[in-house]
Length: 446
Image 1 (spheres, one colour):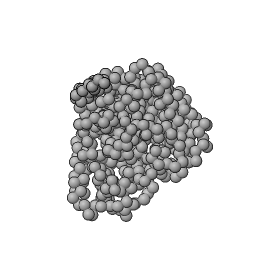
Image 2 (cartoon, one colour):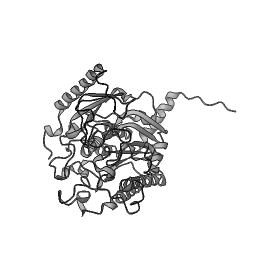
Image 3 (cartoon, helix red, strand yellow):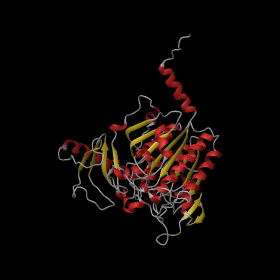
Image 4 (tube, one colour):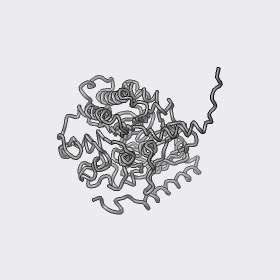
């Protein structure tokens, strides 16, 4: 028997890095709308069947402490696509259909950053980063292709004008049958993958569902025990399954990073038409855990081993990570709040441990309302769409999220040292954000 060849570990590591740099992965982000942490099978829902998402969580990486950067639609999407806290956007946390502001032309979106690295780019689904000026729309912000709604699917007549289903900068149809949207966006995604299978691509798939009004497709309506909400979620799961199947068919499965997240927590005021945050308190609109702590699954078979990752990560980190994976540099001409978590995905040693980096919770109208550092979370202001004042008006609340993820037991009176430390972080963050402002503070978009 021949002896094993001994190769230094450093040589293997460098070789692996070189291979990764020359074979940048395709990147897909699937973004659900108002899906709660507890709304998929692998996170504990007893009745909604999500076999494809469950398989992603089993075969890939499941983040249990992933945060959207906002509990509302527009602000969360801004942060995902720019890597920046929503306060830097220069607009409110939810843009109406007739909003005069939108994403500033000087922002560097993830699509623009990836195009610089030679990626083909597309978005099929909900945009919601401005629509009253051409400069706000996807094709002017890094995307080669776009089919979808420019804002939320509930911004309908008579309160708003007819909602357009757009193709690029043009309108395909007004007030379309929304029960066909999930299938349409999935079909467009499959076509994009097939057409760009021989080049690098970035696909952003922000589905309209399960945002109210609920419109599951005819093949899913009435099938779930959880009613129309469950039907809509199960159709999303089907869409993810079709995409994963297509990647295997085209031989792209191993070197495509597929992310699945939600833009914010469940819309609890919609009762049975809304979802569940599982064991977390409250939901959409709030900076309680249920408003921003949402599902996050990542699959990249060539590099990610099955793992449940308990590190604190957020949507802005996805921005920084995707740029790094593509071989690009995170912009240094502006504040980017996200940090690369490539080391979390690949298991490489020496990567930064983000547990020492505070995460700031921006809530209603992009107000800074709480901070988390490691296990500790401090609220300085709270809000609930349910109208519930959980602690009888007390504003400063401290929780240990490791032992109390449901935020039931306030420890602020017994740990004044932590209250002071975390309060200072909030003060510093507010001052820094005020100094920087947004692009809108410098000049208006053209």
